[in-house]
Length: 348
Image (cartoon, rainbow, N blue to C red; front, side):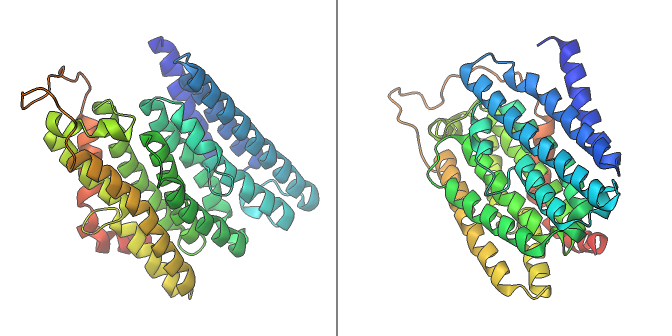
């Protein structure tokens, strides 16, 4: 793609999300969502491959549906109450409709079906943008309307997401689909605590973006999109493979890695809010996700690819990709647990 065109599209992505962040009016927020959706569509379709075009079409249709629902719900609220302010959503019908529209935007279960299919049709770089940056604008709106949302609906969406996100990834062999189901499960964890401690949900979002970026960049660096090709990485890049294994375990939420922190704090918050059954279901659902992370770790580090030659190391070309971003995100995904007390002081 032409670098000037790429610069325009990436700046439009940034402008769209920033517009939604800065807005307190529904029309302006909707406009920001539309700008960021339209900016990512050429990036998704740039490969000119049938799978990429199919993924782009599916993404466009779902995002357009969600945007239409947001516009309809905000207009309904303005009609009934005379208020366009995002934090003045008092009409229950409009509020439920807008909650479901934002759930469709980010890919919460049970309106998650588009996400694995779309992510599977994209390359890893665009998939990374879709899994991280494109979640920010809808979450800014969810953050603002969270005090008014229906608690039962939010808990049902969150539990469905963590269970389906864990269950759906169990039998997958494509890494992008596994990361899509991982994304759905993490979104459930963020949503469950949004009403009780919004700052904790934002912390979870930041750590999810860090860990997912590390995973995507690792797979991009080793040019791997299938579980079977992960078995070839151990002999080529042993150090990176070890770090990738730790990153995946961090995504699964194992101590003493960074990923344990948000799960621990969220379960603690749910227990404080007198929701022990919800907390138990969430903790058990996390085990489903942990299984497919362990499966990926096993494929990467504990299996040796069938090899007929007698050489100890496989011939390969030197990678021309920059590894600075990968180094930073991997480091953050592994070592932030000890600063939990400081983070708790900031989020309370």
